[in-house]
Amino acid sequence: MKSYSLLIDGAPVTAQASFESEDPFQGKPWALIPRATAQHVDAAVEAAYRALHQGPWSGFNATQRGALLRRLGDLLAEHSETLASTEVRDNGKLLSDMRKQLSYEPQVFYYYAGLADKIEGSLLPSDKADILNFTRHEPVGVVAIITAWNAPINLLAKKLAPALAAGCTVVVKPSEHASASTLELATLIEKAGFPNGVVNVVTGFGDEVGSPLVSHSKVSKVAFTGSENTGKRVYELAARSLKKVTLELGGKSPNIVFPDANLENAANGVVAGVFAASGQTCIAGARLLVHRSILEEFSERVKSVAAGVRMGNPMDLDTELGPIANRQQFEKIRQYLDIARSDGAELLLGGKRAERPECGDGLFIEPTIYARGDNQMRIAREEIFGPVLVIIPFDDDEQAIAIANDSPYGLAAGVWTNDMRRMVHMSGKLQVGTVWINTYRAVSFMSPFGGYKASGIGRENGREAIYAYLQTKSVWLSTATNVPNPFIMR
Ligand code: NDP
Image (cartoon, rainbow, N blue to C red; front, side, top):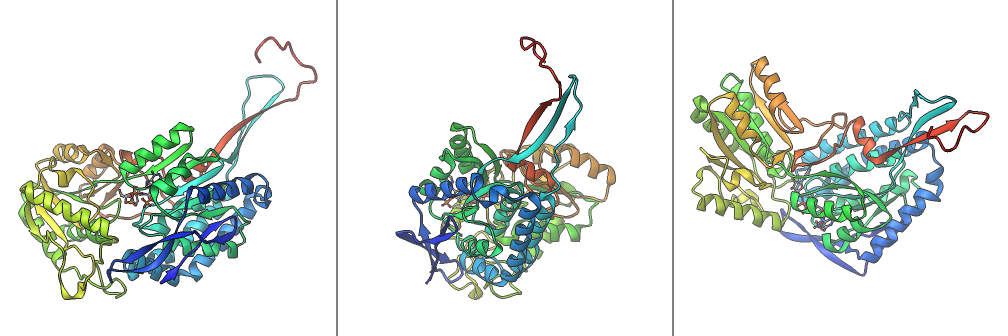
């Protein structure tokens, strides 16, 4: 089995214990992941703290930091095939999808490399005589980066790149279910030329590694992607020492289809929105809101596209739907299929483990659709994080908006229409961080991404994201030749 090490203070570190990571297609363990302890966390944070305040990194200017980020982007491109195949084995991601993703990921590093030396303070107008007042943007400190298992490199890149561009140092903790690609990426950090301690990686379990990391007194900020419940726990832990946080959490996003839309495009968009990555994306369009006048016709259309999806070995380039990434998630989805059954949901497609020959012993779930659902059903309110779609009818625009917004989440929404007035109206009324019109799942490092309501706090991607890793200092400089009366506020 492949065996990995932690990265602490620039050196590979072996943990005394390790745990197995399972290949979800083969259904067998394939790698040994180090099981770090609170002592490893402490060593990693101390190394990051030293690197921030004493090491060469603290003297680097923003252009130099940008050059290292660019080099890391290049290395990511050079090692993309290893990273892609690691993710396929560890996480069941499709090789075709990972190749595409990894050809894009270096751009995230190039973008923030370029932004690093374009962060400018301001010279402010002053209402006081003989005063020069200006602002500086300084790194927020040591950042704890905690990621979910569904897209480890992508979730890491959009935190790591702006954090390093801002001049922070980091300690990364990936999910216990998918740590291998992050540990592979860790081997590129030194090659890129980052000084020791700037990037550290500790792997292990949430309570053994995640909690001590979030609670550590020398961590100033937590950048987290994960579920709503863990996000709340992390927020509470971080609040005890008033750490800054960004939280990218779950979703139950609506895809809203109006009769005037191009229905063929809409059906493809809906299927891609919920079944891509086997539904294991935070932005999965898991609620399909369809105008009642086209309910039957459109439901059948979506069913027919979904029924034709090719399942199988994620290494095969023509596979469209791979396995569920880990056994725990597989069981969770099956529980939701039971809940749907006992709640009387009307099954249109799937609803069970896939037992097709091409799926072997892998952890596959059939693409599943429930027809004529109700927004109050558990399968319509809770995040399943699997290939499960519930169709909900609506009668007019206002009702579509009301149903879409009647959710604890607010990550994203899709709207399918050719009516320009409706496009503008809907985009203003939907309480979500991203609205897609006549498309779905379009994301870019250039465009802010994040959630309303229980879907999170703060934004990633785009220029805005770097400010989550900076703090503003206001500097007052007196040019007066004599000190005025000290007992009167200036
Ligand atoms: P979890 O919330 O279970 O875990 C997320 C991370 O938190 C993991 O690294 C986990 O470690 C860690 N963790 C667990 N307990 C603690 C703790 N007490 N303190 C600190 N860290 C802890 O999420 P999943 O990994 O299951 O990911 C799926 C979720 O992520 C879904 O809800 C999905 O919507 C969301 N997500 C959101 C995205 C967004 O951008 N909004 C993007 C992608 C996913 P361990 O695995 O070891 O338990």
